[in-house]
Structure formats: structure tokens, C-alpha cells
Length: 383
Picture 1: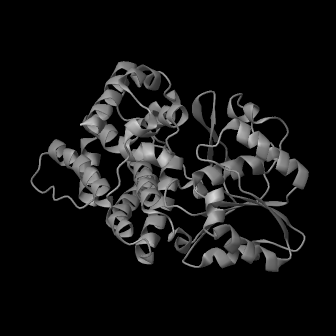
Picture 2 (picture 1 turned 90 degrees about the vertical axis):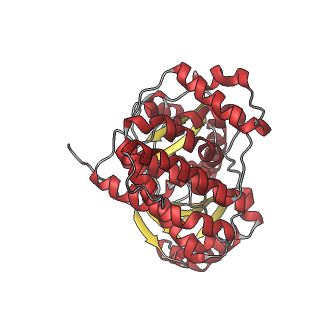
Picture 3 (picture 1 turned 60 degrees about the vertical axis):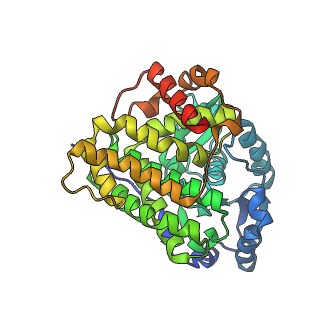
């Protein structure tokens, strides 16, 4: 086995490390702050501006990012980039804001439209603008990955390039303390799905295994605690570290069935990424059990299940129960029906899966099996 690992992001991880942002800026900088309206409403944009302003750097806020950012949003934002001509980009938010900022930073220094890089295989030949990523959720791990996911042609299509790695990640769990329960639970389950899929996927290696296992352990111990008390900074810190480790693991090892199935749910039914993954995880794990029973058995143990004396497959099944219990403990429900999903949509979902993600899944799956899995989830949701 050839193991490769590449992680150029300068990661700062500590409660209160937002203040370090000023050290990466100078009076000559023009800073584009990419974020969403919700973070402006809760005052986090103002907090970041409070760190930028004393540096003497000029700055402009672009706060029109929406969940599941699409190609038209990127083009709209690029108009701001071309007019303002930033020297640095700061991303504040979850995966949607950070992914958008990654693409803007790269397109600012590389000619041609997004489609050339997303669909036509054009490489980024010039270094992007320096990007400083400040996550406000313990979910996507985008602050440490070389992938940006943008919706186009009814697909959540990732753009993968070392040019998309942020220069710096400031992971400050204090910024996550105001995250509502629903987002805390669904983004936390998203982070868990990254770790699980990285650990059981075909691209796993000893380095990603170590990170994925620790991420599973941390998230399993912290998610219910942070859902019980969002101001619990110790639990927030554990979730943030779990998200970072899961992000590195999945970026290097790849993803699988969960993320493949979630793509059409997000594009056609406008589910948030974390919502879709939170629901899908246990079903996709159950489907994949036979391909990696020993690994799923270890996931069960990492999540606190007592698997002593169990047959490996029984122990593997315990991992599904553990994930179901963990999500139940958050008290959050994600009803598919509220997004307008129905049985007749099974073929639509199953025929629009990203094949590049399925290629890394530990077990092969047909379109008919995907339809059946979707219908099973829908039936469980309506019982």
C-alpha cells in the first residue's frame, strides 16, 4: 500500500483564537469577508470585523451565501471580487461559506469561468488569494480540505485541487456556542459521517484511520453533551476537533454512499447537507456492514458499545444502533416529508448519484438498490 498525506493548512485550534486573525493582515490588505446573513444577524460578522478593523486593512463583507451554494451564486459573488479586487479572503461560517470563499479565492487569480474548473478538468495554474477559514460549525471540515462543493447541473459537484486548501484555519469553538440545537445536531452528524466513510472506504490508509477513529470517539462522546448544553465549551471543543480530524480523513481517504445519496436530496429537495447526511448515515452503514464488518465493529466500540463476546458481524450491527442512539439523544428529527419527498421520487434520486463517490464505497450498489434504500428510509420516516 502506498500511503500519501498532504496537509498544507496552518491550523490554529484554541478557544479565543479568533483574535489571531489580525496577525495575518496588514494595513495594505483589502479583505473580502465571505459569510451568510444568519451570522451577521447573530453578531459574529461584527466580531470578526472588530478584529480586522484595528489592523488598518480595508474590508468588504459579502454575506449573500446560501445553503448548497450554486454556480449562479458564485458568478454573482465574482462580480464583487472583480469590483473590489481583494488581496485576501476570510471565510466565516459553515461549509457553504467556506466552499464559496475557496472558489472565489481561486477564480480571482485564474482566468476562465467556474465551469472550466468544475466540469472540464482545467487546473488552477496560479496560486489563489490567501484564504483564512473560520468555521462556525463542527460539521463539514471544509477549513482543512482541498475540495469545494458547488451545485450545478442538478449535482453537488466537488472541485478538488491543492489550490483550494485554505492558507490558515482558525478553529475557535467559542464561535460555535450560539449554534442552535438543530444545526448543532445535524452538522455534528455530518462530521461523524465523514469519519465513518473515511474509515470504511476503499481509500483508507493508516494515517487517515488514526484521524477517523479519534474523530468518531470525540464526536460520540461530545455530540449529546453539546446538544444538552450549547454553552458547554469543552464539548464544543471536542466537537470542533472531531470535525477537523474527520475533515482531514475524508479529504485524504474519500467518501462513499452517504454523500452520494445526499447529493440529489440537497439539489432537488433543498435539504441542507448536514440534514441529509444525518438521516442517511445509519442506513448506509447498515448496507455496507458486510463489506467491512471488522471496521464497523470497531466503530461500535469507539461509540461506547460493549461488543465483548460478539460475533464480528453482530458487533458491526451494533455500530448502526450506536449511531441511531447518538442521533436520538440529540432530540432532533429531520422529516423527509417536510421537504416534499415521495415514493415516486426514488428513481430521480437513484439516477442522479455522483459515481465518483460511489467508486470509493466499500460495497458496490446498483441503481435499483439505491431506489430500494431511499424507499426504506421514506417508509421509516412515515411510520
